[in-house]
Length: 292
Image 1 (cartoon, one colour):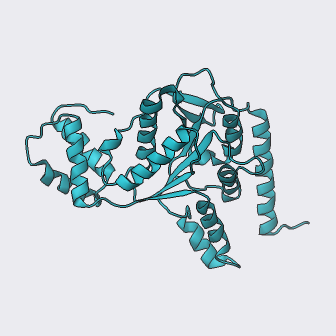
Image 2 (tube, helix red, strand yellow):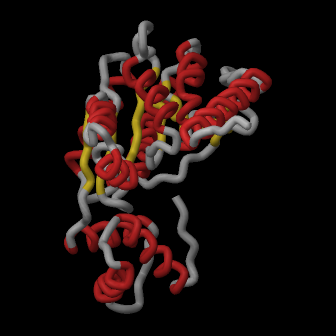
Image 3 (tube, one colour):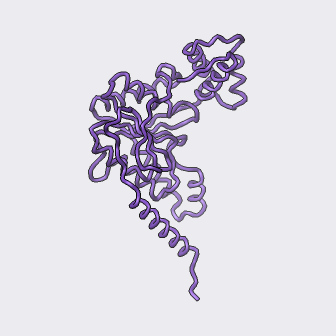
């Protein structure tokens, strides 16, 4: 009776999984970009293998994003150069959670639409679970007459063997090079896109413990712009809230600054997200509804 080792079992499972995915991909329809759509933003849907139009992007005005001025100006200038047809870099937005990484990308896109109108780049979001579809999606966008900001929020790798190659092809473009009409922005809580469990595993069992980590770091190095986000201090936190209060014309009946600081303490951090949650709660207390 034949026996199989654990390694051979895992290899067989991997081969069968790869075959099933290949068959599934062949049977699914090709991605088609809706050229006739007048929408300025789209989300890639793996279920239907197409791009779903988004009519309105919920994001604050750029001037309401406080405490990140240098980062905001750098990404805006890069985006404006791209919108004008000049050279621009792919960007990795990394750092503290809740400090507006994905919000900044959406707010900049809204700003570009106001500045350039229909000539503004379209925003296309792809979820991190669908990173392996990036090369095919890139080829579809390459053939379009539009320009695109391709965006992935909270980038990480569930299947490094496939996802690494897919993202690398987007950042470098392979033999054809990156399409002139596409730029890639990603956000991540980690500067080097390195999952903690990956570091632990490599340190424990790796023959060359640093090889996988070096590969991941090299991948993040392929982003031309690294933009860091750090936790807000008390002054910036209160300024963010004050800006929202003025924007939505709220009229607090009590000392909102004291309450806002207490609100942050209960959550263990001061961030743009915490500030927005406090303002949303304040609006509810005032029997008002706010929305971007």
